[in-house]
Amino acid sequence: MKTNAKLLICISWIIPLTLFGCGGAPADSASQLRLVNTYKLSFGEPSGITYDEIENVLWIVSGADQKIYKTNTAGVVLKKLSYTGEDLEGIALDSSGKSLWIVEERKRELIQLDLDGSVLLKVSIPLPGKSNSGLEGVAKNEQNTIFLLNEKKPGKFVELNSDLTIKSQTEIYFADDFSDMVYSAKEKCFFVLSDENRALYKWTKETGVIQKFSLPKTKYEGVAVNSTADKFFLVNDETNELSIYSLK
Image 1 (cartoon, rainbow, N blue to C red):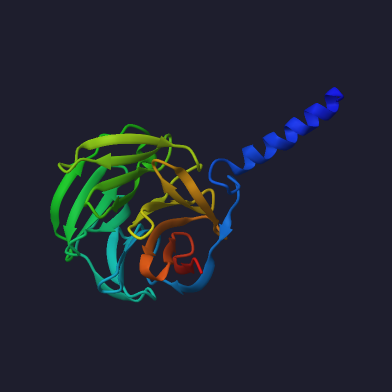
Image 2 (cartoon, rainbow, N blue to C red; image 1 turned 60 degrees about the vertical axis):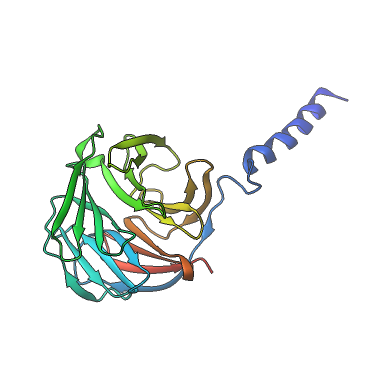
């Protein structure tokens, strides 16, 4: 067999292995979410969001006035909390449903609030880096473990101990920045949002990126999930919109 023919056969085997990886799907492929609805919010620069499946309501962080709003699933404000932040980003509902966890990006702080906005707990998270490339997301799993997301330089996935000290830090590189994340108890994974890459990633620490979903624009800064309905709630801090996307 001629050398060129041998080379061609080798390449024909190497290319599929490179594209498809161990999971059997193209590593750089992107699925599309279906847009269900979009609502204009009455407050500016939404930068974090969490969903309460019991009450069927949302809690949304505003970067404009540094307030936290309780809304219905169409973005209509039901309540504004008393707490005023300095550089609010991510937000997660406690598994008890009786408190919220928020992160202050520049101050590198994790804060627990009651549902009126009073501070219950405040913890400093010693992560290095530029002040405006800090904490962007917070999530909790069924075991009540808290996870944090650092935006970039470097992107980091941080797991906390029960006493809220850092248990582990994992540098992540699959996007140019990381703007929020949410844990899905149904899927046993995280959905990680990237503003700059206009994408939502299905991801686990053990497996890496499982699936990538393309988004139509940048500046999506917050993501929440209704696992039972296979729906995502995304907020855009440039258009001040709440968008609902479906996997189906």
